Length: 316
Image 1 (cartoon, rainbow, N blue to C red):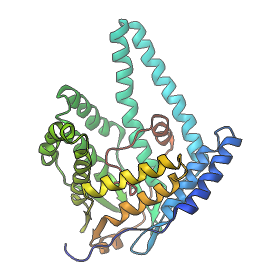
Image 2 (image 1 turned 180 degrees about the horizontal axis):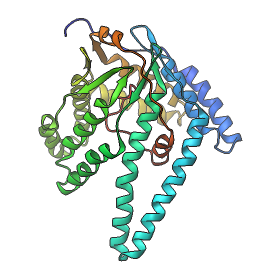
Image 3 (image 1 turned 60 degrees about the vertical axis):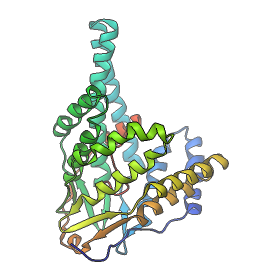
Image 4 (image 1 turned 90 degrees about the horizontal axis):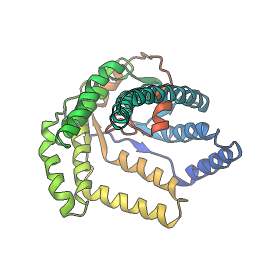
């Protein structure tokens, strides 16, 4: 499909975000950290509400109370899994037991956290009054995630582009907007030579080549993502990403973190400006088709600070 691309727009500003963060910080201190869950929800609500596509803004419907309850459940689940891993470590020889017990625990917990977090966030996200949803399954995702991780380790990282693309395909194909489905057609083989180049060019360029690699992968992933007849485009370049990252680092460093809200606003605007959608009419046919989602996975994601590979603001 050809035609002019529609670009998302971010309407927020760092000053307003600073006020939100300041209020969140003070209330988090007063409540000994408990308010942090409501703080996270407040920031998400602002960022989503200030982002639009085709003149229509996104909305985040999650709440701090949900995040708090999810964190409690996730903490209990994590303690249970770690306790089981500890028993395994005790029953087997010390070193082997620790590797087997806690390694197996990580292989189970991480995909649960990733899928649960995505299911929750998408279920609480809407655009044009229609909710997003995630129809993926924990067991199915583990069949992608666990072999991929093990093969990446065994091949000393050579399998990683295939693993990363397989994860992307699974989560994008399971993502819905109302009754419509997103699709990913990328293949790890298309990324393999670029991945091999990392081993040579990253050391030779003192790490600078990494920005060009990430930008290429970002373009490739979006250009192989579709929603019906709608296609996505990305114009992100390595030079753009490098300059953007350096400025952000300088802002945070020389302001001792005070400029972080402005960095958040810059990040949203940077992503929106470089993303385009051709064939917006494909979204007009989407009908509301919501799906219930729990919040335990989101709590696990927060506890372990994990995100799905390649996940952007739009959940793709």
